[in-house]
Image (cartoon, rainbow, N blue to C red):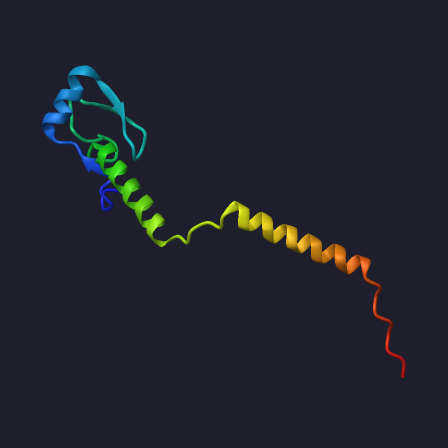
Length: 106
């Protein structure tokens, strides 16, 4: 997720700011409690503190939506689909009404 830009490491200033509001968080890697006033990484697995960056996620989602719109074929019109279904049903009904061709005899 860091490579894609969705998750970024917290700066020491951000960690200190969060530590003033929240004293303990849980590690994303191992789930152990991390005391923000004592350290800036998990004491159990040494994972650095990271954050899901909402602006990066929003930007990526907009890019994916734009790419899908650019490459996706336009959806068939509902009227066109309905007309095709009606024609298929007419052909089926016509085939049922017409007598079956007699089998060729040798």
